[in-house]
Amino acid sequence: MVAYHQKYPKAGVIGGNVIDAGGQSYLSRIADIATFPHHDTMTQVRSLAGVNSSYKKEVIQDVGEYDESLFRGEDVDYNWRAIQKGWDVLFIPDIKVKHLHRPSWKGLIYQHYMYGRAHYLVRNKWENMYSHYPIRIDSFMSVLKWCASWTWIPLQDAIQKAKKMNSLLNGFDILTYWIINMANRIGSSIQRLQPSA
Image (cartoon, rainbow, N blue to C red; front, side, top):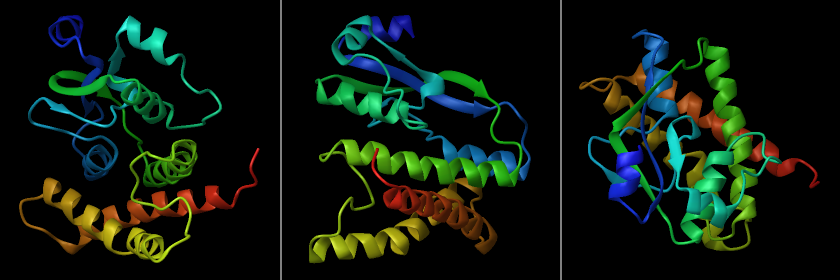
């Protein structure tokens, strides 16, 4: 990590692959693909998982600390804040960390439900932040985006993730990822209904 930080001075946040240390069970493979992005080549990204990310000292001085009012998504929020300050976020596949993913289906679904809740909070903080979900429904386009966020986007994402699982698509993998995506979407909607603090 230190060598890559020295090599790429504009990259304020650097990290890489999160690899499941729990084995190769079906649940483990689903959790790995559903939870952590994987790239084969070095690429600039919007966010890195907090479990495998590092920050230049100057970024911490520039951006400040994690927002501890968030119960998840602190890494997404922090990376977005770094981007807003002009720093690059760099994914380097050679940087790897082993991680024990959720060991049960209930835990995995709950994790993605809570990610959805956190996504709403982080996205609500930043008007200009990327999101599949509209923060407010105040135009015809936002209605269309809201409809797509419940139908087309979760299905398309499930198909893409199922392709990473097997070379031959099957309905069971697609359904599994769709359920995980819908848990995330439900979490975001539940959080939207929570009273503001």
